[in-house]
Amino acid sequence: MKHLTWASEQTAFAFSYQDNAMHIADYIVLCGYFLLLIGIGVYCMRRIKHQEDYLMGGRGFGKLLQTFAAFGAGTGSSDPINTARNTYTGGMSGMWFVMFWLFVTPFYWITGVWYRRMRHLTLGDWYVERYESKQLGAAYSIFGVLFFMIYGSMFFTAIATTAEPMIGETVSIMGSQVALKYVLIPTIGVVVLLYGMAGGLAAAYYTDLIQGICIIALSIMLIPIGLNALSSSDELNPAGDMSGTEVMHDQLPESFFEILGSNAAEFSLYYLIAIVFANLAGVVVQPHFIATGGGSAKSEQDARVGLVVGNFLKRFCTLGWVFTALIAAALYADVPELIEHPDRTWGYASMKLLSPGFRGLMLACLLAALMSSVDAQMVVGAGLILRNLYMPYVRPHGSEKEYLWVGRLVGVIIVGGSIIFALTIFDMLGQLKLTFWFPLVFAAPFWLGMYWRRATTTAAWITVIYCLLFFFVIPFFGPRLVPSLRTNQSLTELTTHTQTTRQVLMSKSDLRREYAQALGAW
Image (cartoon, rainbow, N blue to C red):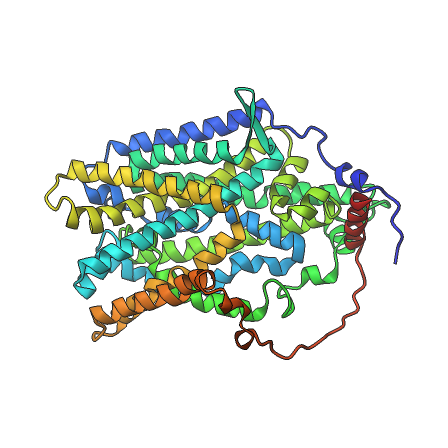
């Protein structure tokens, strides 16, 4: 075992840009990006005359736009951040927080056709028609809006977490220091609203094309720079005879290159199997699938190709995020900020490795990942409330112009709710896990309604209420109303404990991390 003689701070900054602040060039890139998106929204607004134009873009999108719509809606700003966080702390097995969708994606070839054939504007319309119940459609619309708020909040949280190492944890407003998230998250929300409210789904799809290219750039931008930093580091490669990948293998433990972690890992094989089946059941009722899942395509083939290719494109991007995180784990194993807050890994690496201008481009790419998801969700969520609550119960005979403006105003509520969730929860992993199980509430009625003619409205309601009670209401309120549920010995019996001892040789990055922690404690 080697004795390391370098100082923690020296290692952390020897291969990085010394200027840690955002420059005017970075802000110019961001402002130009925002203006471009708003311009697209205003342009698309001129083509909107009816609900179908706003909610489905006239069902006129081909393979290219459907591909990037599926790619954009399925790739949020939280995905590279979560992947980087889990890979930094646990190695390649951390990619499964995003990559588990790989096993679900082939089924999209089957489901993509469903949404095209339905000819509905929202999935709530399908529940109304299949079960002959406006009330069930209204309940689904409320579920859909809550799902979008939770899902969107995760992306806003990711942006704020990444921006903190790049911009700073606080900003000065009128002489007072305000936490960055309270300024950045609402600002991004306003931009999303401006082009989403104006241009509807067409604006969302055209911007998704641009933003999809940005996400691909985000996925590979740091890799060559990071590998060069590893190979040229005097501390990590003193002889200068190793390539970047060789330095990475020299520094990191072997377990970091295992695709699946042990049973005790944060993401074990058993957990992977559980969430694959849960999401296979629940993904079909995610509300935005009525549009990005194929409903807005020109033909059934366009729907299939767009949905499958767009989602496989995301899987390839995930490999880039994992590679980037492994580079960061080798470079910055001893950085106290990342040891304490591993979810800042992507932002920290971007700030240290990229020069001014490119930092703004990286942040713009992350914003692209957020906006490409939230804009489609905002439009589809507006359609849910409009079609399944406002039109049946408030104004059944309103004008098309009135309905369009109601849809736009509902978009404000959805994005506003996402912002509130983001500022109050501010926990990406908690928000992500909630999205795994939340769609299951309406999953069973959908599958049974598609394949079994005898599925009834009463059975659908019983299923929805049962799932709500046993998945969410009882687990949350039960221990609070009856504390003995947590303390009763008959309910807290443990399974047989098995003690396993493993002997692991510490890697160089482990030693650097331990040295940094000991130095901080001292």
